[in-house]
Image (tube, rainbow, N blue to C red; front, side, top):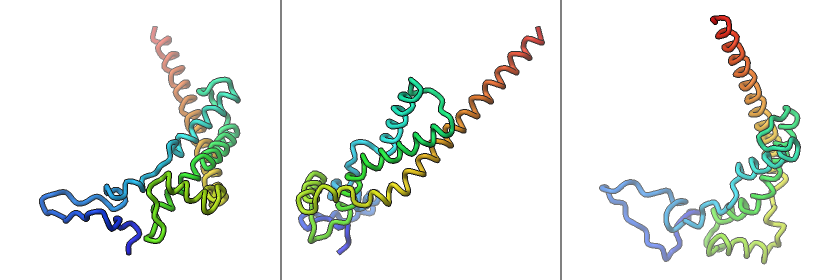
Length: 171
């Protein structure tokens, strides 16, 4: 049977030509338990870390960072993101891959079964591989974004200074 087929007790709606197409199986009412259970999104965890890192380093979250500082902060942001969200990714993957032999009543039941049957450390399986991908990428993204922002701020300031000098010359 397909991995995302509805449970046997769920009625299967018949398609009607007058209605819109049926939603994908992962989003149908029978599969609402497959939606991501993460209360803190991955980007949210990264930006939260970066704001706190900047505040600790410079005294305020809006301060400008050098490229090196942004890169290091991005590495920390990526690592914190992985550590905070990995258990939810493991559970989400298990729910999506659930078969007839392994049924979960929902997200909380999946967490319980994993911890009970395999141990809490299983919630962090795959963390090293995910860190190898996410951590350097996050460092590069934050460094690039901050460098781009800093260039744009300098260009704007230079343009405003030129405009101010030109308006003084006209007087």
